[in-house]
Amino acid sequence: MMSEWRLRYAFPALSRMPTTVPWYLAAAVGREPSAARRLTEQFLVRRFEQVFPSATAIERRQWARTHLSMLAREMMDASALHRLGRSGGPEIDVQGWEHVDTLIRRKQGFILVLNHYDRLLTSALALALRGLSLNTLTMPVLGNPGLTAVQRDFLVRKVKSFSEIARGEWRTTDQGMRPVYASLKAGQAWGILADAWAPEFTRLRSHPFLGGQLHLPTGIERMAESAGVPMLHAVTYSDGATRLRVEVETLPDNARLAIDSVIRRLERDVRSRPWAWWHWGQWEQMWTPSSAEAI
Image 1 (cartoon, rainbow, N blue to C red):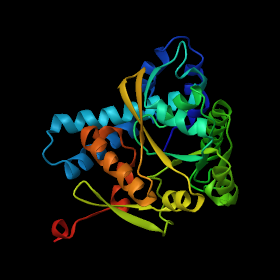
Image 2 (image 1 turned 180 degrees about the vertical axis):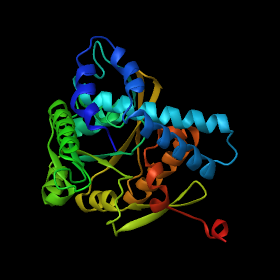
Image 3 (image 1 turned 90 degrees about the horizontal axis):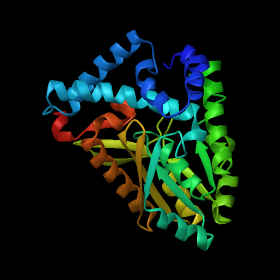
């Protein structure tokens, strides 16, 4: 779990420091206390050994440490959202903005599909800075029993700060989807995570992924079909602590095929940069081996 001391004091203090120094210091401060980080690193090394048996011990250890640094820098991002992509903050290069701009000019509503990959907020924020008004749909925060009061406050500030920059609305999945459908049909855009996962999810679909099957909710594809809107996919790649690259791609008109395409790219990205995916702790709940591997 995230350290409450870091949420309440350390990262807010770092966010007030000038230049990009805070993003380098964030990795040293860490998202968790040092003892917890050592345990997480050991867990990740074992997980990478399970999923990527051909990788060397040195590679697995480096992936684990890079993963922890990435999460700490994402927390730094969340604490200083107003500085991302601007003077004194991390640089963001965007490729594929023209796909977003085309839909904006048409006044066409659409879903921006994201995944828990790399610096989570960067792609949506970078597009908002270029003119996209983006609404956000997330899992419940205030009613989440797995969060402490400090963690809930941090997440609420994070999403509200993003919504102010993106000039959009924030809704959670427990609030009802009718306003979201109406908004999409009226020409607005919504950012939604394709690989969001919780034990209570029941409407799942399986995708080939790293030699087995990744089981993910079907909500986005059902929403796109019902609202009759297209989808775009955005991915962030860290080229350094303060150098970020965002790639936006179009997706097939068929919603099911569109999500298939998103998960195929996620698989390629995870193979290329295993450290950048957030969900290794939920691997055994989200993924099952193929029948041949299970024997």
